[in-house]
Length: 248
Image (cartoon, rainbow, N blue to C red; front, side, top):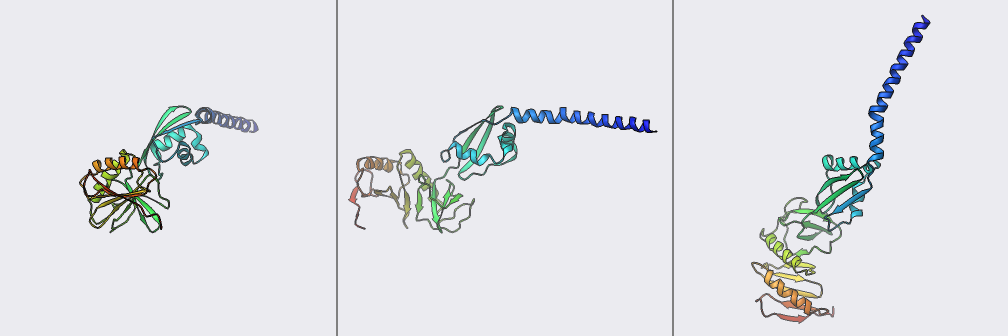
């Protein structure tokens, strides 16, 4: 009886040993190879105008597991959406076993408004896409809009929908001509005034602003260091420029 028990015991031990060996060969060994072979050493980030590579990588590496190339790539390629302020989306490419390439697509922002101490940024359709406590230096502050409704990720309801087309035209021309515009202001008649720091330009009300902003760029180049208020509202050839009152 005892011999049978010993035989059965040896048989069970052999089966257990064989099972452990199979687990080692078919599971632990591949995992070990995966861990040590696919170590994430290089991340290339392109496309972002608001974040450098380090800032993007810092937001994406959330745990030690993310230091594995395959884990990192599959996680963001198929399973997790990236939510970073002012980033529309990202695309991920597996370059090799140690490298991943990331392409960042920025949200297209045309302006911001100030509301209760925060700055709300909106796109060309007037949809509020982000809210921050600090103002971005390259996005103009829009003044003169009368808000009917303010909800994040929804369209900003203002007194006239056509204002967003005007703002888009202005910001496109401002960017094209590399004008450092701080604020875009509308009065009750929807006439436009730009504040460029030392220069305040009254553009009036126009269907498009490409010609007048081209003229303004030349004036800004010639008036370096001067504080001026320029009335450009009555035409495109002759303008009235007055020194700003510095005694305030």
